[in-house]
Length: 339
Image (cartoon, rainbow, N blue to C red; front, side, top):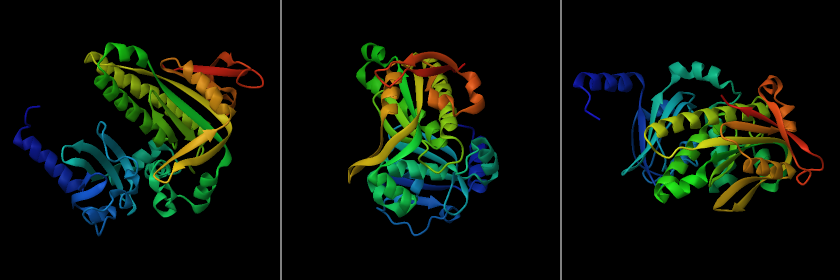
């Protein structure tokens, strides 16, 4: 891109540096290398070179090292109480984290999110459940009771969302492997953010699918409703992303969503160095079959989920049933094609 005129560049620099109170970090392999800016505004003090950045900035847990497209988190509540706009991007030097004061936009974002807990808490909960320091209750910002229950396993009424990328098999044949994998990673990263925004925990994110659990984190609102909201947003942003990629004649995918609700055993499994949140029960067999049947841009839900979404029921139409091989009796499935 051509260089901006000096006057425009000066305007941008002054508007950011004078009114947005920037602070920044350079991170390599998860450790602090350098930092600067107005760190104290965000409650960040006594930093040391080589220190693990996640111990100072909890919402970064699970996001670094960063290998995907840049991420912008518009309104993260810092421990100091200040709302920050967070930019995360990777260069040859390492991973950069830029914080900008977002106090003036905080009220607007809180209305749009309409969540009882702010996004920073959701991200802390999610990422800590997926990484090796999960057992550290203080760093995870989870109650001792919740962590203890998850470590032992518990039966909970939850909503499970499966986002399945469609048309992957044809792309494997038509495009170079490196391009296919890079594109797939970009889509997975795009899918994950709306799930986190609405209080989901991403329990699995590999291959051509992402699984998320709603109803584990202490977030206000019906887990089933939040899962539907997340599903609609996932379909929308994947479609927008694909439209741009098609214009550029690049690989483009679509996504189909399956959602079930019910009683499942949830718990934390894995070694000390890698822990994962899992769910076990008959509803998982149902969502697995729905995943095989995933239709591009469509959301398929079971009867349990349908009964829990109130006015959203008007968007769904009964489409088919799941056979008795999966459950004791046929299970009605309702489908909504996102326009």
